[in-house]
Amino acid sequence: MTPKFRAWMLILLLSALCCSAVGGLVWYRSRNLTPAAMLRRLPSDDAVVVYVDFAALRAAGILQMLDGAKVGEEPEYRAFVARTDFDYKQDLSAAMLAMAPTGNYILAKGRFDWSSLAKYVRSQDGNCNNSFCRMAGNGPERRISFYPIQSGVMALAVSADEAAALRMNTVDPRPERDVPNAPLWLSVPPSIVRSGKTLPSGTQMFARTLEKAQSVTISVTPEGSNFAAHLDVRCSNEADAAAMSAQLTKTTALLNEIIRKENQQPNPNDLSGFLTSGTFRQEGSKVQGYWPVTRALLNALLGGS
Image 1 (cartoon, rainbow, N blue to C red):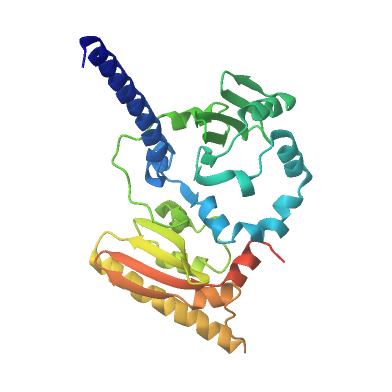
Image 2 (cartoon, rainbow, N blue to C red):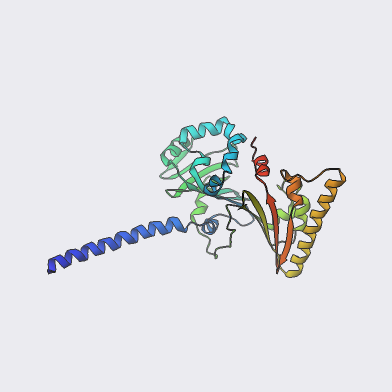
């Protein structure tokens, strides 16, 4: 092997290593935006946080249930889809929403036509500066701003602050929080649980039992041909967890009794059956809950026919 040939081999090897490093960095950055990493970018303190794995729900046939929901019938939504070539039922792979006191913040992963989105913003009297766009919402407290964190990741905010989306450019230095390994989950801060505000009717009696909780998370996972809802509550000590588990069990039994006194039977395909089917157990300073979820119940909740 001549010195000249060895030199060319060295150049090719270094080039290959550089390309691999760049490709690995791109792969790592896109892979690294896990649900836990997404949560570190959202203003999640005192916020209700919702995570949806659209790809998993699409594969399970859940998103197809939305075909009959009102969102698909709204003329404004149909116009938005036509002018931006974006439909969440097809183009979103995952999204995390934080409903905070300062506004709503969303990190969305999927397929975005950024040029069409920018044209839509300008058509609505908004403006885009480089890749950062802002436009008016339905009121002065609902200014919309968004920008691409990556080509397939959007940071979007609806807030009185017209630049609120930029808050998601900063990563929380605190360690990553544990998040459920589930395609759909909801985290409720203690302040919301204690106030009972924005909670669905029929759930307030359960919420009162959770007043001593330090954190409350509800997740939904596949279970055979149906699904299951899981409750994960963290308390400050084992005594509070034991009392909470016992109270949740008592509240479920009381709800069953109330329904039967009205000569009714809990229906597994509506909230009466769902709320009365819960079982609970204590694990140290945590409380775990479980409810079976039928496809018929999901279809009713999502507005399908």
